[in-house]
Image 1 (cartoon, rainbow over the protein chains, first blue to last red):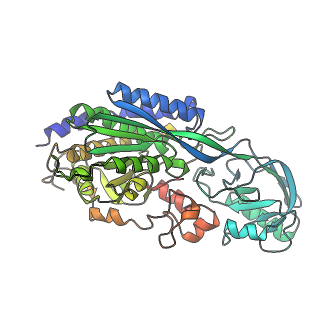
Image 2: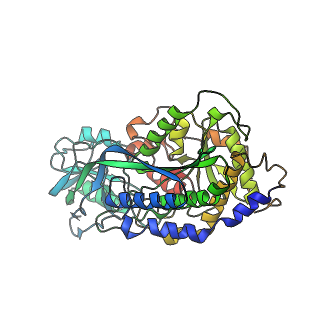
Length: 417
Length: 71
């Protein structure tokens, strides 16, 4: 019964996917932040790849406002009263995305937000205090200092989404540096001299759309943008999300020639800036949906199309692939479950805060699946941390799910657990 | 990878994936955090303290465990 599907699954090529990850994470595409030259180069390459797979390909540009860009390494020196310290950029200190631009050095004594005179001081923001509340305590301050956890490799992770910049420079510190500065601030002997060179760029991002035939029942999506490089620090964005793009491209390569009704793919931009690419595309899909109820070969009302499968992170499968569903996705979840059983891929409900949420919010059946990331949003997100076995497992899961959803099999029930 | 595989699929009701805890918060701006939903990673207080859509430590843990957290 499943011979056709098993033949397809056998065609999934992990080596090809690994090569895609290496290519997308390479220097030519330099972090792939939305609006960057590297992002545009990656988009051109992906368009050509999809065209080479026989798809009808289009590019849909859209504006994105105020993307935070750290434009130089911050210069930071602090003194604890007896010793001078120079925090390492990326590991111990990083401009906060809500920071005001501070291109020149500013020196001030260390203080605690909410305690004492803030004038001229760099204020450490207590963990229980929000940044917005700290602004209220920071009149005349030199700037704010916020503690944030670093990853297992000791890197700060880069964030591009958040509120508009506030009135003060803000630096993010690793917990150890924050604790040491807090001791000095309490003693009244410490000072900091620092810059916070950050700007906001209004840019043009672009989604890449591909369709084969009538676009089929399933829309496969993955975001191709990354958080971008920092000055002197490459952030390859291999797991997040070159791996997801590699899975979608490979699934399309395997599936497109054998699905009579075709297939659709969207490679999305600006996920790292708040899932803006999918927000745009989800609205387009919603508007294009047919208003007439019909039933297709998979037993799905045509108005239920497309079923959206989003892949964000296929780098390192642990106990199970995380799955979050939204919209009218019961049938899609059943297919995903059957596909997981057939391919031997364990699944578990878990948060997938990615582009799938935009499609679900638009009323579409959508699942987000993720299988781990190494070095999330940091210089440690390198291709060597992307496991080929994970790429293969997630791709097989996607292929089997799409095969079911496309009506090529009515069910895989009968698989024995 | 075949009909006799015993390890794949959901070990719980697949519909549980429709009600993932704290699934309303991320992929927008921190200013749009829902009052009742909470962030996708960590607590509202942690996210608020970092002016982020997620708590940082919880976010790192979640991502390392294979879950997703954008932005």
